Image (cartoon, rainbow over all chains, first blue to last red):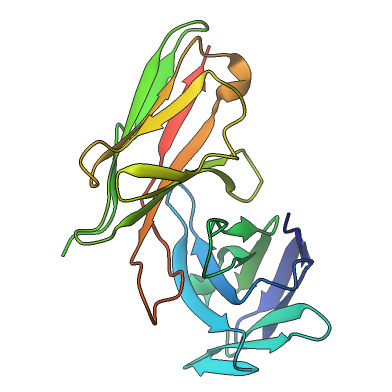
Length: 114
Length: 116
């Protein structure tokens, strides 16, 4: 089955700086890679995703990159704000067949210091 | 419309008891997923429904866990003879299926289960 590894487990940055979280996956058949933000006591919220037919996607201060050859994808947050503080999870899945579940990384606790 | 809703938000039970957790998916979403999240970990897959049928239940840890979705909308996760190790947040997610769609899954707030 799929295995997703995520680093770092904790990340502290100063407000206004950039934050980068990295993930690797093992299943070459995975073709969909979402990122979720989870605040304390809440369910994961989808913030951005990328599909295997593109290498980069950007949405305002958030960008994701995907390297299919290396099986590596990353989340970049620029101009961080205190409200960005949360746990971020990467995930991978297929979009066909029966194995459509998301396999999550172990999470990154991001703290943005004012 | 409304997002995914889950009830109850918290459930405290005693070891050996039976519990039911409910999920209301986003209207029109044909796929429904259950995940379990232990403290400090990412969600782990339990079971996936496409319509009324369980398309993949490979994540259910043992036969004490069972889930149904009789009308293709609301789903119930059932846990028999609960154990302290079952304590976790149980998350439900739903997504659209079909040509041209990927697997955007939208999560509910979860049910926090505590087994004493």
